[in-house]
Image (cartoon, rainbow, N blue to C red; front, top):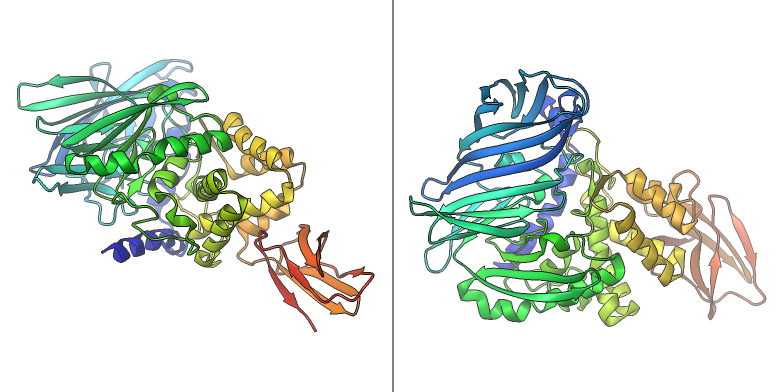
Length: 543
């Protein structure tokens, strides 16, 4: 079973390769582009109210959307995917008309939308949301039972979109500044969602409503509900911004195992605050929540299903042994609090910003506790998972992810960049600076590229073109003749001229290849030559 689940994980990170072969549809464009029905209004706040009926596997509710008018326009675009449906929309107690195009709803507003106005609409919805086939990668709702026969329910929707279960502005470029999440469940269960639990209402129909408040911007797919007969324990972590509340929700049968395994959370926070800066959501706390699937980076409500084992379901993705030193889901999914939830892509084509940096965070965690040798061996070990079959960056404006290589090719690209910087103090400052410069922002690849070029003081344009937009591995072609080394780069994009560290005989040296042959004469015959394995490149001797 474990091998099957690990195979599913590896299958997920190949889904994007398939998606790049698809023919894009009108619905892809509606979902993936910033349309005229979206750009005129700035999303400010969601007040999401949902009642869950486990017996019928259905949900119903309303979403109050608060927004600011940026440009006068009278049609608003909202998404909700079948079999869910919008049944009514109101504004100022007036029922609004809407038209449906695929799963995009175009709402005709009656009141004149004046620039600068702050307005709200209320959307009523219901249905049986799509059941997740392979969560979290093939998303929707998961309806399971715990060992006591009680309901065990969770949402997961990255890629497929939050509109698979609730109506929203389902494009990543615009996030609400805050959110309220009110989930009503049977009274023998509880809901854990994002932010802090403000109140619990006991209703007359044998249900409870859990009121969660999110005080920070949040992306759509980061919103979640997790419903079970949970046990709860907590601790306080003394971090860079003060005391961080850490709350843990697990099935009662797993409480003892969780108290042991979740000791990795403070270690994770210590390492990642060192490398990336303060945890980005102190106001909303940190939560780790057991779910009936592997796990996901829901903001301040990270979900966990790794069976309380190190590695990913007990296996090491690097094959080096170092991947068994930590619980992959705790470390990787929590790393997304910095890269995905704090710094968020505007377009899913730039998903490498989430996955490349967070896969790289795995080896920085090892670096913090076990040193550079361990971390280097781990990230280099993950290269066996790189396929180089598609570019890392996907197609823009059609909700298209890039290649699965966004994970470990992305991580090895960043590891290579660390070598070019050559100063770990500076490298750490750059990583922390990213999370400060783009704090709670949605970004583009260009913004990240420009920031890294500026702060490394290296023109990285060709470097990023090579690793993000090309599938070839840079290859150092070389010839050795007595005491002369002749070398150049092949399999490269235009203007790729990355320097590289090599060992010649018994000394290490930087060389500066381009696409033209260069010669280096030595004082003695060259009997030993190899490239530094920390660079993600190949070499080829030409006789």
